[in-house]
Amino acid sequence: MKPEDRRSRIAELVRQSSKVAVEELADLLGTSRETVRRDLTLLSERGVLRKVHGGATTAQTASESPLAERRAQARLEKTTIGRAAAALFEAGDSLLIDAGTTTISFAEQLAQRGPFTIITNSTLVAQEMWGSPQRGNIHLLGGSYHGDGYEILGPQVVDQIQKVHADHAVLTVGAIDPAGRFMDFNVEEAYVARAMIASARQVTVLADASKLGRHALFQVCGAESIHRLVTDRPPDPILNSVLRASGIEVIIAGNGLR
Image (tube, rainbow, N blue to C red):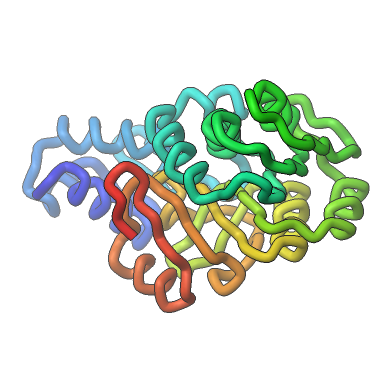
């Protein structure tokens, strides 16, 4: 079994049983306990599950790690996703962009193109776009500032977004569950994402593979509201079928697969 196939199987077993012991995983997969422990460490870092003494449990759905910590995780994958996503947009497009580690990487790449009209609640996205050699208009939404995520949230933000009619919304999410529901850990971030979806002609979600098949507390939308998903590895067959049945274009960054 290939390492990624083994890790996908581990993630599925944990989701099915809520908690699984290292010894049980090693027996089921025909591999060593040391290999299982390394896989659990990697999957825990990706946020797919929570490693505990002697095994693993499902990841917590009520919270995620701080933005600074998340920016250090899967950095190469997020850069690859950002580069692939930036190529999808044409100069002159208007984009609503929410706050997240992958949209920051996207903004870094998008800033090399353009010009674009950008509406965002992320101070870091706005700063990246400000450095563009072909800078367009940049609109930073106003409201309650949350320094941990370098983002602006609250009803004022949602109200401003509702008055916008953009070409595109480019969003990150905390999770895409096996049923194809797009989820988040923060209810205010979910409200912002929903408003951006309603105010754009087309919606693109950027999510590294650690978000796929994962659960979070608050639903942003169903698969039917999303037009494109840009990720770094193919979803598992069940999730992939759900996404494609809903008409989502799944783009695998780095290898050109769609």
